[in-house]
Image 1 (cartoon, helix red, strand yellow):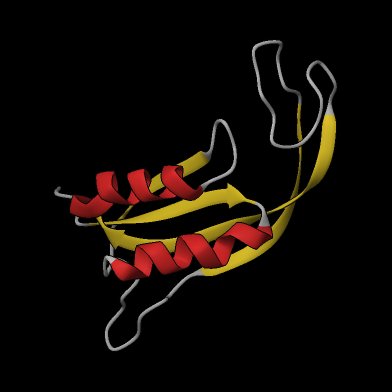
Image 2: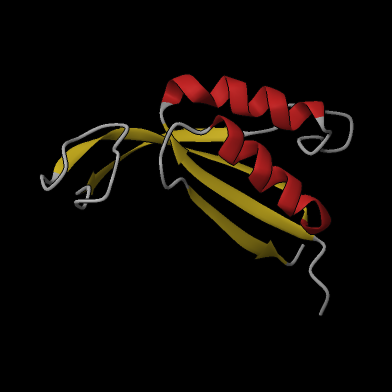
Length: 106
């Protein structure tokens, strides 16, 4: 089975959602039918501990942190995923951005 569409999930601070959305929309990957800028996001809570080589955006090396961030979600064509990841990484503030890519069967 050939995968044509994927769902992308990104964890990021809320203040970065609009910038990421705009850059992805500029290349046309957020269009669904007659709509563009099609994304969803929700607030999530999580834990993390920066290890000794880390340069954390938030938190301190060696200490477990807890906080809120957002999960931004959208679908796009699989053929565009490398460009999508490149754009996300160019804007994303985290040293190690979480970018989940899930195949869609619809």
